[in-house]
Image 1 (spheres, rainbow, N blue to C red):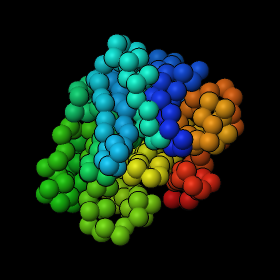
Image 2 (cartoon, rainbow, N blue to C red):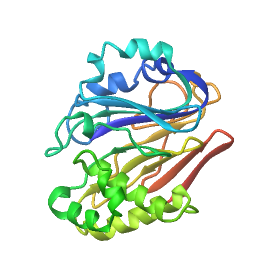
Image 3 (spheres, rainbow, N blue to C red):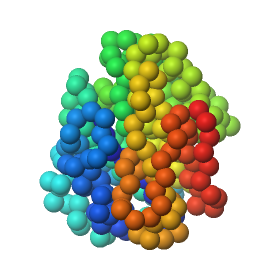
Image 4 (cartoon, one colour):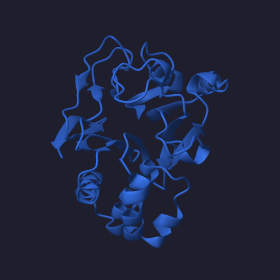
Length: 259
């Protein structure tokens, strides 16, 4: 299990997104309020954004977020209109390692996942790996369920350039529901294509992990934010309904679609 957050809107510094909120991811790393499993998220963290050409960029560290002496320098130096960040609580069998630290990315997408798939390595990974195109399978660097699910999303998007992200996520969940059968699968996924943020609150055979969003927080004027837990005590944070996809677009009000 992990805690994640994403922002889209007017350009803000990284520290305004990650370090300054009263219950930001730094606090959620050691004092989460709604974590379903575990008590801390100390197994690494990562930050993602898109460069001026729209290409994903990431900074990841397998150490706890509070131990990174570089973060304060990055926080005051980097400024972007879109941020995606995650603090990790590693699932057994998926070791703490740079290759297992999100966000994951390809030429277009940033991706993070809060949750797990029970018995992934023995039950689901063999099926998934047979389904993936060889070039997608070859690009997997770590062994987590999270990165393999991202590979499945990449496979679906690559197979049809006209496939909208929301349609690809719907197809992804249909495949996973069939493959996991009776196994619990917690699938809070956040994806960015550089123009929008797509965030799901979803699970099979289990309660959905927490997820909230706001468009009305004075810390993020004009911005839209989604997070595992509210980043501030102010603002109007609303829970994303279970089994829904949230789409954040700076040009439109938030959209909620049933999964």
